[in-house]
Structures are given as structure tokens and as C-alpha cells.
Image 1 (tube, helix red, strand yellow):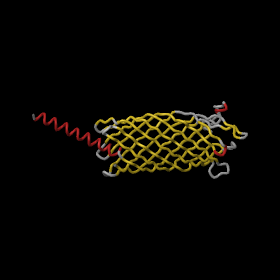
Image 2 (spheres, one colour; image 1 turned 180 degrees about the vertical axis):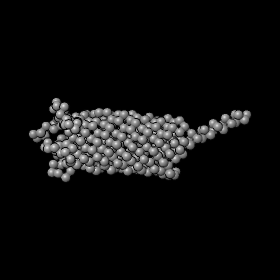
Image 3 (cartoon, one colour; image 1 turned 30 degrees about the horizontal axis):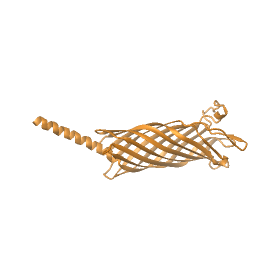
Image 4 (cartoon, one colour; image 1 turned 60 degrees about the vertical axis):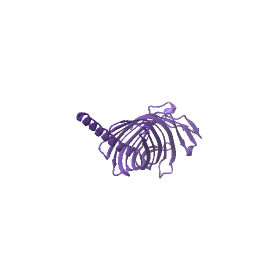
Length: 278
């Protein structure tokens, strides 16, 4: 009888600990957050005339057009984890704006080796998935849909400056892993693979607007969450995004034959902010 009682007490203690550790993750996932971001932006067009059948004309640097730099932004999100139905949902919005280094050409073909571009980047995403729980670890496979928009002003401060606007949707599958390290500290890791949907570009000054080729997209990130009280906490993290655009069809604009070449984009954001639990 004593042995049975001891086993029951141990099982209860283990179950209580597992629930306690799960509860820390539940706190984090039932919250709204606001964060400051530093977004490292790296955009490259390897060649500018592939649509004309010449794809080996990259410069010695390996690209014709490049933008690189850090811009400041903000990220807002809200998430909910319902253990009654074992389901997780999250919606997020981000926006960053600033100036980055530009290396490329003007619309007239004049080289711009050390120019400046204005960058305005915004996006939102929705993530949904079932919750798989095991003690202090939670795994959430998810589907994610999102939208990305980028407005660039090439040659800021010059008479040859012009605007280009890009946008795409995307869809992907991923997994989120969360670990309750202590009663107040939770670590999160996620990764996702998907594809861009309906990418396009417009250049108002040329009257140019064309679809771009869809291509793979990957996302990954790691976060550390510190719960300071039942009402709020702090978090910090790093997020990584990589995607590509395929080249556009050609279009006549006056005497010019205009196209948008294939490109690659990498964005790495470093963020820190507040979480408010509900």
C-alpha cells in the first residue's frame, strides 16, 4: 500500500511539473507583443539582360544591381494557444524604413557605384497549427500565409532618382518548437519552407508593370522569452528570410525595351520587445 501511495505521489508530482512547464509556454503563446527591429537587407540582381538571352554578363563583382544595409523597424504580433482543442494561431505585422547603399545603374544606364536607395518594407503573416505537447516541450507544425511589399527609391538625392515597387504573397509549411527552460524562461525555434505567390513589380515613371517568376522561400528564427510577471515579459530574437524573384516579361516603354531581371533577397532581423499576456 505504501509503495502504491509513493508511486501515486511521484506521478502526481511529475504531472504537476509537466503542467507547470507547459503553463510557462502557454503564457508566452497567449500574448500580444511589440518590438523594435534592426533589419539587415541584402538584395542582388545577378544580371540585367537575361530576358534578352544574355545571362553571362555579370560584372566582376558578380552582380549588376545590389542594395545592402540596415534599416529600423517595428514588429507587432498576437498569438493564442488553446490547450482545450490543442490549436495555435498567430498573426504578425512588420514595417521597416530607411536608407541603404545602392550599387547599380540609372534608368539611362549610367553607373551608380556608391549611391543611396530609400527602402520601405512591410509585411504581414498568419500562422495556424495543431499543438503537440510533451512535458516542458511543445512542437507545433504549422501552415503560414503572408504578404511582402517593398518600395525602393533608387538614386535618392539625384535628378535621376526613380521608384520601383515590388510585392508578393507566400505560402509555406513549418514547425515551431518551444522549451520551458525554467519557470520564467522559454526558448523558441522555428523553420519554414514555402514559395512566393503572385510576385510583381511596377515602375510608375516608366508605366511598367509586370509579373515576376515565383520561387522558393525559406524562413527561420530563434527567440528567448523572459516572463517578468503574470502580465508582461521581455523577449529577444533573430529572424531570417530568403527568397527569389524570377525575371519578368519584357515591355515596351517608348523607345525602351524594359524588363526586370531575376533577383535574390536575404533579410535578417534582430529584435527585442515586450510581451503582454492575457
